[in-house]
Length: 197
Image 1 (cartoon, rainbow, N blue to C red):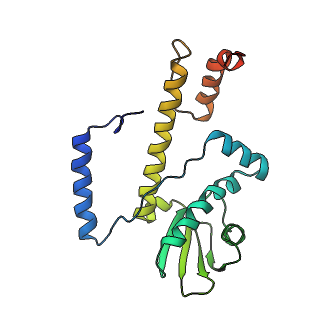
Image 2 (image 1 turned 45 degrees about the horizontal axis):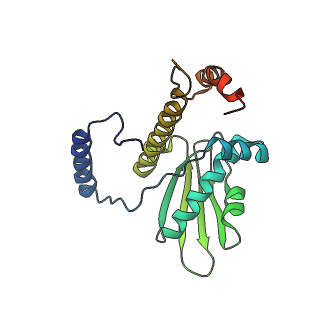
Image 3 (image 1 turned 90 degrees about the vertical axis):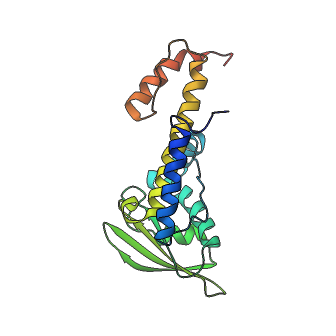
């Protein structure tokens, strides 16, 4: 029920989008698909309990997106993803997430860039996947995905703040980051402890 765009002028956004579209056309770039895979608190916490590792938890969500992209991408494509925390080695995680129908070959692994060739069994479909430190600086699609993810996160925080503000008088809103998130949890504590909640 949240009206979009949120905190933006529709006319300015449409003008910027038109300008971006012209620049993309000049550069031979076409947007084929845009999606966000949100991970809510319950799913995130359950994964942390299972993996005991934040990087593995991030990769669980990544692998869902990567699997969908591999199915949609033509062969000879290059997929650039942001790093999952400080992880450098992804071959094992890719093998586990993509299953036995894909062959993973490590092309290179370094502190800044890890690249793998993924070949689908039974056809000529082959995609190069790179996990890059500061991937949004290296790849326009990665930067666009980062912007979308951050926007969806902000919208989720607006909805959480709105819901609790209706129930807790004079509640100070939060962006949800660690220190202020703890303050917010203390502020809503009485509501959470209420048996009727």
